[in-house]
Image (cartoon, rainbow, N blue to C red):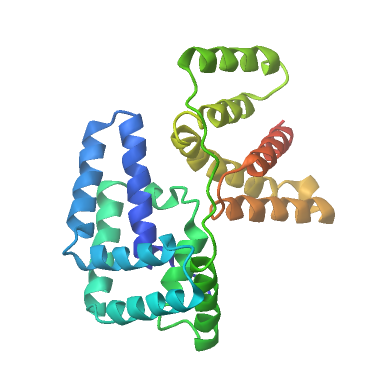
Length: 270
């Protein structure tokens, strides 16, 4: 069953947070104010979507508890959730979706949300359209995650600005002739991600992944690819891979794969 992300309150909140980040980085004060107003209006502690978000975040963020405790937490959250006015949730989601479309644009819904898969899993356990068997399996997955140890990323030492600048310059000097412009941009953003908490990289991928997807999709209409079953199949696999990136955390493997796809797209467009 396909998950409707626009009816996922956590997803709506996450894309707004990312939109806020983009507007701050790009110094778009007006857009920044608009996003803040939307978040305050729909996700305040007394708003029904704010209450729903709080419950979902508890499930998403809870780790390293016993299985019994995880089951109790899940049961209590479900009890509280279904005590909320469900028609109000739907109505507020509809208003929020319309507000985003009107004030920020449809592109906002394409903002890159690395933890989308986990958010989708949580959302579906509250969806009465999801089959009982599927719900049970999803709940088991959530309980397993809650009762496992939290994966802690190693603490990275802050990078001295001068060291960072020299490293970037050396990188550009070394690869300026062998890499495509978008490949250099991707790697530069990846380097920067260690000093800005990944904001710049996420912003870049938010635009780059849809661009690559569109290019590969268009290539499937090329005569030589249409006539080549293997190439057509490979192109479909690349599109699926790009779509899957929207649900994955950014890591070196993803960066490596995107670099290869950028090279592929360049060859297709040559």
